[in-house]
Length: 171
Image 1 (cartoon, rainbow, N blue to C red):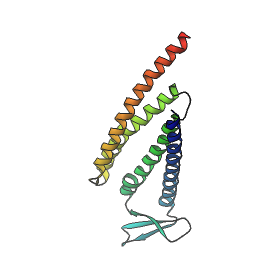
Image 2: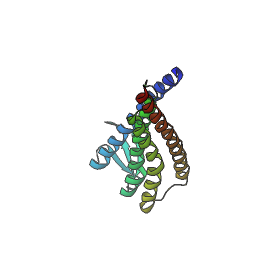
Image 3: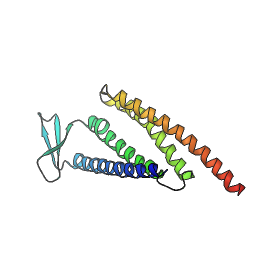
Image 4: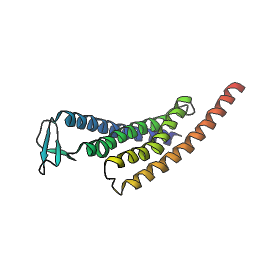
């Protein structure tokens, strides 16, 4: 179990950093797109550079189209922000002394619903407004498989919580 705690701690920090970076990028992009600050049009006004803060160096290139900006840019950024921040919490729970708790079970349930439902629903909604790239199906399938595995893990945690509660009552 000591190895699990070490690996869980390392992965917690990695995914926390990734989630924080995605959050910063999402909020910065949203600020720039809403205000027009630190953005430059190019390609005859069809495209938009979001520059690094306080520079003229492009950080991200975006179509100058509201539907694209919402469904193909901001929505995926927001999804992966939530994904990595929740992943960090999943890895953190494996560093705890007591694994089988109601809050850990709730966290696992949120995580599997996030992976099972959100990619499919957001892609379906986005498909109404923008063209969906072919590679997105692979990402949806990967998140779906991850969601299934986490569902199984949550069922194991639920059984563990039940056995732990029985043991506590018995003692």
